[in-house]
Length: 365
Image (tube, rainbow, N blue to C red; front, side, top):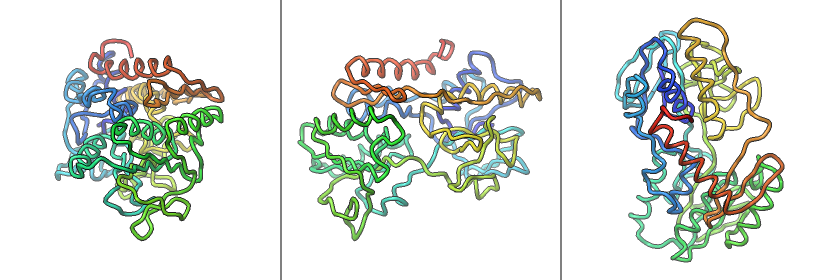
């Protein structure tokens, strides 16, 4: 049983297309036919890609992999009785289960309630909700605020600058007290700050909050604001904890080095919903993608009843390519960072190649 069509499970399905599925009936439960690749969302917002370019068709992919697809969401799991309860009231049994549902939005918890907020989470519907906001308001926004100073927030600030360039919208990035790109190297932060200033995007390294119906940063109002895009990372859904799975202090499924649940080793988890307990692995698309082949191998071992489980060992540094929406990108690798058009071209090549690999999963990934 596979729950969720996240990046790690895409890797599992592609592995099974190439090498053949394990000798077991496999079902994927996902609420959406199409999975959106998060790495291409800023480019789509900026108009570099059409909406469909970053989508992966789960119907076609599961058919090639010999996997049954149930278009529904997981509402609860009974780890003892080994059953899944879906949102439509269906009960599905399993022997071995892997969970990769992604996280949920944190905007309401971090910022507060406000109708101007469009949360990036869930990623699959973000572009539709942004388009819906535009169709409802119809007015060209005068001031857009992006809340969140991680790679996603920075890329979206640049993308929104390009999307609304014709209307001269003012863009503000509220990065939070943790600072701009706090998980990347200092050189990357320097280049990002320089590019933000060049594009006249104000960066505020204070926490954002809705207070008395006004958006504040560090306790000071930054109104008037027309749109608030929340790129604050993923929170854990409630149902894993409520279902009795072992979770960490933040509610993420606690897993070991093999991605197995600490409380129920017949259940695996990866991506934004999981938290390794033996080491820190950042929640990012890069690590979710790299976890996929390991997850596929471990599911094969569990089905076959053999040993030899694999551990996902993150590299000392990962390559991040941050699009600036101006035809250039910032390439970041550990303490090193450079900016140029070649980096943007590399990012487009990598992103398109990854998405295309699922349209033709027999090709090398």
